[in-house]
Each structure stands twice: as structure tokens, then as C-alpha cells.
Image 1 (cartoon, rainbow, N blue to C red):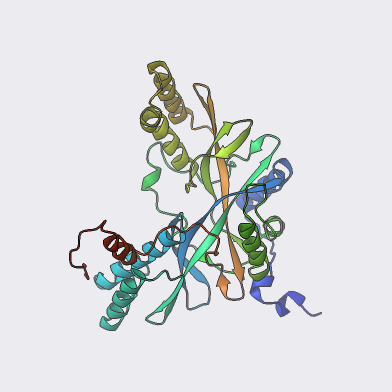
Image 2 (spheres, rainbow, N blue to C red):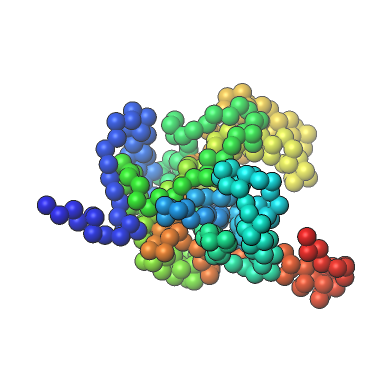
Length: 347
């Protein structure tokens, strides 16, 4: 009997396989229960990162911290600069000893990216790409879904920043097997398009085009954000962090340090209540918190990368991308008289 899936390209195939891993089984049960309890999908602003194509044809994530495409381009250019200046063996894959020719290629690449907004570039025979990922949240009658018990949360209070990234180095393999539950959940996301009266039509049009050109979705390691309850609904108030504790640490810092500075009308009593709430958050490590008359919740974020026949999706024309590459911005500022007319630093 013919295997029909074997005749389809990887970007149109979800390969389902059985697993005996008990942790994966529990996570699958949680995911299925979540699909029933939080049936609606909503999106935060997309995030951006960079990838390198591996010799096997998969893609390895080099960085995933950009809130705009240009931030991801700047990070990739900085990585090229580091490689060009690196000591022997000092690279993402530490077994690679860079040659003089490769140093010259990476030097030329980072200098080019200081002037041009490139979403794809080949350097020394290696392919690099800027990618976008939707940040998907699940919601239901109880609001936005909080973290699940099986979501990784290993850091101590105040120490989440010390953890190595779970995304940097993550391999995006379109042909990798998934469980049945994961396969169904990915099908839920394949036609996801932003909705609501406030969504511009060009954003919706780009999303519809992407669902056709990049039909397969790939879910990256789960993240966590902080949401606040306002005007009768929950909405994200921070970007996404890699772990729940990182989100807690961010919320605690806001309550102790930033809220008193950002809210000048905050009285001494409210400041004390904010600080006490931060102390409770550190002690209890919960998912919900009240601070004075405000309500906060840690919410689960699934970064979803789209895949097509040419690989991961690049930034869309409608994505917010206000900044120029660094040298192009300097040139514009000099022309406008906003920058000292010194010699360019070509180093």
C-alpha cells in the first residue's frame, strides 16, 4: 500500500508518530484539555529572529529577540561581526575553525547589513534568513490561558536571566515527527488570521497570503508573558519571556521599581501595596496576582513559525519596521543635522 504522505513535500506534511515518553503523554493530555477550556486563539505582536540553514537542510535558530525585523537583522549582523573577529573555534558550532577567507566574507556581510535591510544573505556558502513568528495565546471564558504544569520553569526567583536560552540553537525540522495531539493543534493554527475591527486590511491580507504560501506551522518552545485585566478583559502588558519565572521577575521589578516612576500620582500607600504584592509573587510563584486595585496574570505564549517550500517565513510587508540599518540611519541623521559629521567607523 502506497504511503500518500511520502509523496507530499515536507511543508505540506505533518508526520504523526507514537511516543512512549510519559512526560510527553501528560503534556498531550494537558494540551487537549486546554483546547477544550481555552478554545479561542488570539495573537500578540509577532517576534523576529535569525536562522542558519544546516547541511541537512533544516534550519538552526541563531537568535530570537527582535520585536521588529530590523532588530533581528541588527542581531544577525552583530553575530557576523563576532564571527569575523573570533578566535579559532569560537563560533556557535565550536568545532568550526574560521579561515581567513571566511573572516573576510563575514566582515563584508556585516558591513553590508549596516546599510541594507536584508532578510536573506549567503555568506561563505552558508545561508542565513530573518524569520517572523506569530505569538499565539489561547483564551476562553476564564480569560487567557496561564502556564501549564508541564511548562519548564526551572529558575529561582530573580535568577531567570541566568538560564541559557531554549530557543537559540533550536533546530527547525519540517519533517520531524509530532504526536497526534500536537498535529491536531498545529492544524488549528494553520489558517490563523488576525481578527477584530482594529486590524488593518493590509495586515489581514498579508496573513491570508502567508497561510497559502507558508501553509505549515512549527511551534517553538513555549514562552510566557504578563497580562493585565482592564476594561473587562485580559490583554498582554509585556513581551514574551522564555520561562514563567522570567515573566514573574519582570512583573516584580515593575511593581517595585518602575511603577512608582511611571505613575507619579501613585501614593505612598499604593506603593507599599505594590511592593507587598511583589513580595508575595516572589514567595508564592503563582500565576495570578492582585496589586492594589490591579489584576495581573502570567499567560502562556506559543511562538508559531510558518514554513513553505522555500523554508521559514520572512517578515511581511505589513510588519512594523520603523528603523533603518545603523549606517543608513547615521547617514540620514547627518543629512538632517542630527549627527556629528565625524568620519565613519569602518572597524
